[in-house]
Length: 422
Image 1 (spheres, rainbow, N blue to C red):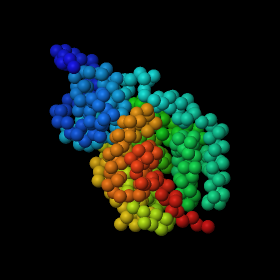
Image 2 (cartoon, helix red, strand yellow):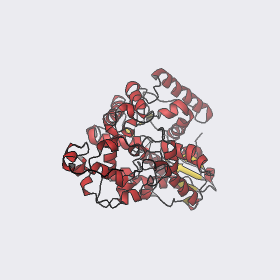
Image 3 (spheres, rainbow, N blue to C red):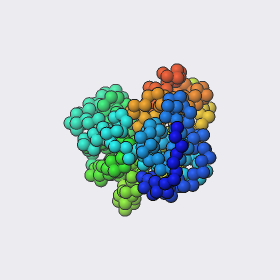
Image 4 (cartoon, rainbow, N blue to C red):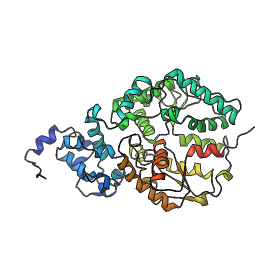
């Protein structure tokens, strides 16, 4: 390897695409202690040895003006932006801002995998999968009819209802490939006698714009959600369950659309944790603990619902809310915390677009940290609050690491144990 020529470093730094981040993201404060890479699962992984990068080396590349090398690297894409590096950094360096800048500088036709195609599709059609509006509405209506026959007499999917209390967005992954999964939320709405609706236009809950660092697309995806809220005159906008989508949506709402919310507008937004916990505490939904009797249960703290929400918004309340919700469903003597939990939780390995992304070996090896934490609990039931996390744990980590577990969404757990009044 040739030595790095730093004779023109000052000039390179001035011209660097990362120049603004030297102060804005506190990059200049880095003193190469290595705490970031020490806490990052990517460090020293077998699947990343060919590139040889870790968080400390990558941040030094930015400092030394090695823009193109960082832009071309695989590292910024296999990073799940879990922000363990940032929570540990003694100097407050915002490393993920640097990775996002490098991703944003990558030509869109060089974005790995299908992510940019999904962004293009959602901007053109209103959902990542390009499902036509007529087909989507028909699907919602037919699923509603099925649910009415199965367990919820009189249920009708409230599409485009004006003036509802709650606005709920669907994940196109479910509409396209796992439609029955949508029934869990609908069953809860039914049990709570909730006044809710969903849109037939621009209904995608997921934000792949933030996965690809296309922040204009991310802003537009959030704007469309706000527009649906206003058009349908819905009072409460439920943030998406997907960790990245809830984070990206809230980031944009607070940065660009805060004026659309508050007492003067009659609109507000909440996490799904808030909705579930409120209804449980009020007795609007009741659950039968015997459904999960004898199960040893653990909870996976999603990075974006927890650590990232804390770093961006000073909000770590979802940690306690999730555990409180679970306490309504099981005897907490059977609950086991993972060794690394809450702010110190390990990522599932599939964040920041790595679940639909192309880096199979990397996300599987990264997920090994989570798999070993799950094994350490002795749990046979893992509860998750994010669609990417659930899919990674259930469909990838469970078979690859031979985990003897069942994986459920937290709202699936509630739906399975609901006491439905006749």
